Structures are given as C-alpha cells and as structure tokens.
View 1 (cartoon, rainbow over the protein chains, first blue to last red):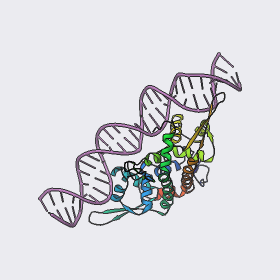
View 2: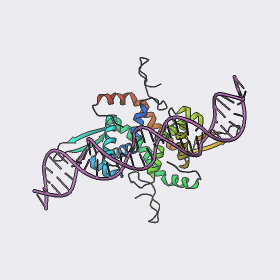
View 3: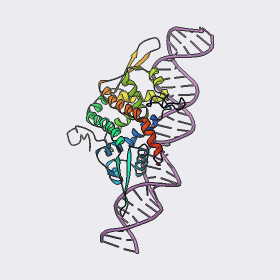
Length: 131
Length: 131
DNA sequence: GAAAGTACGTACCTTGAGGTAACCAACGGA
DNA sequence: TCCGTTGGTTACCTCAAGGTACGTACTTTC
C-alpha cells in the first residue's frame, strides 16, 4: 500500500503499480493525451491561452482549458491573469512543473528523434498495430 | 509538416505538435494508461504475462494483451513463447524499448518521490481538480 | 474427475474522454 | 453601430477506451 495514513505514518513515496495509489491520478494527468503536449509546450516558454491553442495542433478550447485546470490543481502550472482590455491569461510552469516537464520533454524529444526508426520497425514486423 | 515523403526527402525527426505527425500515435502508445506501467514494469526485468498482470494493479487481461501488442508493433517489446506444457510467454524490452522505458521510469519515479508534495499542493490550492 | 493455472481471443456493454457549437463580457477599431 | 479578439463555460452528442464474462486447449494437482 502507498501513502497510508491509517497506520499513522505517511508513506515517503507512492507506488504507481498499486491501483489505489493517488500517484495514478497524477500520472494520468501528466501523461494524458493533451497533458503531455501542454507540459512540453510550456517547457519551452511561458505561453498565453491562445498561443497554446495555436501551438498544440488539434486541441479544442474545452480540452485545453480542462487540461490546464488539472495541471494547475496538481501545482504544475501557474495561471496569471493580465488585467487588460480583453483580459489576457498567461500560463507558466511552476518549479515542480518544470521538473516534470523536463522528463516529459526528454521522452517526447526521444520519440521525435527516433521516429523514422520506429516507423521502419513497424512496417518490418508482421504484428498488428491496434489502438 | 513532419516526416514528409512528398518532397522527396524524409524528415529527420517528427513534430508532436503537428496533428498529422505519426509521432502522436507512438506517443499515445507510450503514454497510454497501461503503456506507461507496462514499460515501467518491464524496465525492471523481463516478465511473463501473468507476472505483468499481477504486478500492474487493475489491468484487465484484455487491456494488457492489447497494450503489449501495440508496444510490440512499435518495436519496444519483444514477445517470446516458451514451448512448454501450457505455453508460457515472456516479454522483454528491445534495445529501443529500453531507451523509452528509461525516460518513462524517470518520469514515474519522479512522480512517486514527489507525490506527498503534489498532494499537499492540491489541497492548498482552491483550484478544482477535474478529470 | 473436478478444479485451477497459463495466455490469450472475442462478444457485449458501459462509461467517459473529447469534439462541436453557441454564448458571454469587455473593449478597440472601422 | 457592428464586428472581431480574448479566454473561457456550458450543453449536447458521439465514439472508442476499457471492463466483464466466457471460451479454449492442455496440464498438473487435489
């Protein structure tokens, strides 16, 4: 078990292999379809809502807002409202957000660099590519 | 555009921010709900189907098989059948799989270690935790 | 001889992720 | 005066992710 309180002491860390561990939730926010891309985009620099929307191809405003809310709730992203004529909102990574984003950017970068090799392997193998 | 063939030259790498880039598919296999956990589990050592099933809390046999098929198709996981009485099947990371898994393990490990801090931040903030 | 373990495949059904579209409020510009 | 921009929210609907359950084929164990 993980992060047990019942025994009187907090676990020092989580265990993603445990179904009930709250780390599962955090992991799913971070590795969600749009969560990864938001973190990767904000890993480059601070961005406004519209900029994020344009940067991440295919996101709807709804999902972008929802993803940002989840990441903000976990303390990875900070939301700043610039009180201007049409109020502009800026998003940047927090200190902890910067650390997760570093891992995410590393993963994403690896995939981008090795994409040709992966694609080649796909066609070579007779295995079915589902999902 | 990414991995363009129409112009006569293969792009050297993908771009996850492009909706049509095939890296999106690979990324979603790797960061899928069970994909992350399978890679993390196999990052520790080679495992049989049943062992994976027991290790990863909450997976159904169906999803485990499906996830393994997708990861095998991308060339991250190698399937080995041991021709025994009830044929046993073993799964291990390929060389490229080992590299992605390293990133995934790093990310997962970071989350596990920082879980208490994240949970504390969640409660401190008034933001709504959705999804 | 019945039950259980191993490694799935498949049919069926539910849930929720996620898309579309409309609406809002405030302001600047034509 | 009406339109467009910014950053959303909300309602509605669809489709696929994913769970449950059962079948299979062969073997060991009780």
